[in-house]
Image 1 (cartoon, rainbow, N blue to C red):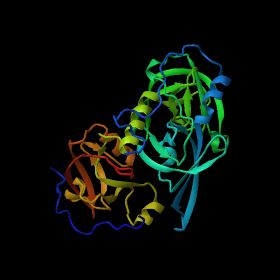
Image 2: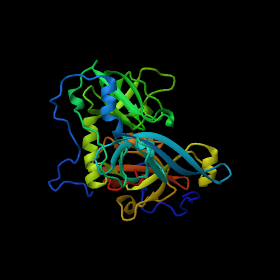
Image 3: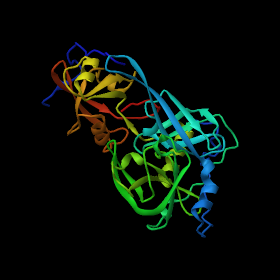
Image 4: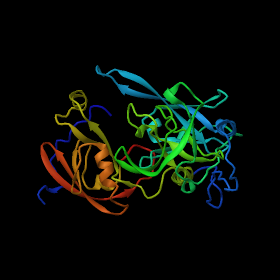
Length: 354
C-alpha cells in the first residue's frame, strides 16, 4: 500500500485537541488431544524424542518487500511448528508467519505442503496453520499449570532454519516469567534448554512426552545462553481451540484499522510523509474508526492518555481496554491535531489490524 497520500481535507469529524473449521466437534469441545495425567514415570530424552519428533515440523516463509530503489524483493524466513490434529492443524508463533505471502510446512519425513493461515493472535504470539494431510501424529497436550521448577524439559525444533528436528534438553527454570514481546506482556515458561532463532514455534515437552509449551525464541536476547522462553500449553490450547473454531480469538479488541511504523527517512519518502511515527494505513469499511472520521495517512500520537509512536505502543495501550470500551484517539493530519472517540470493536479476522 505504498504511496498513500495524507488527506487534504480538514478535520470535520474531530474535536479540538485541547479538549469455523471442519474439525470442530459438534459439542464445541476441544479437538486437541490432551494427556490424562496418568503417566508419572520420567522417560529419557531419547525416548521422548522417539515419541514426539513426528509431531514437530519445519516452517519456511516467503514475503514481498520493497527495496531501497522501490524494486520488489522476496524475503525468506524459517521457524518451527507443532502438529495439533491428525488432519493437519499446526500451531506456531505469529511472528514466524507474520506478513508472509507463502508458508511451506515440511514434515519429519521430508514431505512438504503449502500451508493456509487459519488465524493469528498477536497478544499471545500464536498462529494456526492448516495443511491438506491426514493421518498425522498430533502432539498430546500436557498441563503447564502442573509444571514444577527443576523438572525435565525437552525442546524440538528447527534452529537457524536449517537444522530441522534438532533436540536440546534441560530443565524448567522458572514459571510465569513476565516478558514483553511486541508490546504485549506475556507470562512465559523459562528453560535452560538451548533455544536459537528458528526454534520459534517448536515444542517444549515434559518427561512424559506431553507438549507443555510453544517456544518463543524471539523473546530471548542476543548472546544469551541458557535462557529460553515458551508460551505455556494451557494458554496455547485455549488460543488454538478458539482459532480452529472461529478463525480468531473472541474478545480481542480492535480499532478497526491497520497501521504502519515509519521509522526512517527512506520509508517516510516512500509513504510521502515528512514526520516519523505510526500512521493509519487503511480503515476498515463500516468500522467505528471510519464513522469517527479517521483516514489513511493520519498519524496517531496518543491512545487515551498514553503517547504512542509505534505499533507496539498502540498494542500496549489497547491492552488496558476491552471490547465495547470507548477510547480517545489523538491524530495529526495536515499539521493539525485532533481527537476522536472510538468504541472498540472485537477483532474478528486474520488481517494485521490494530
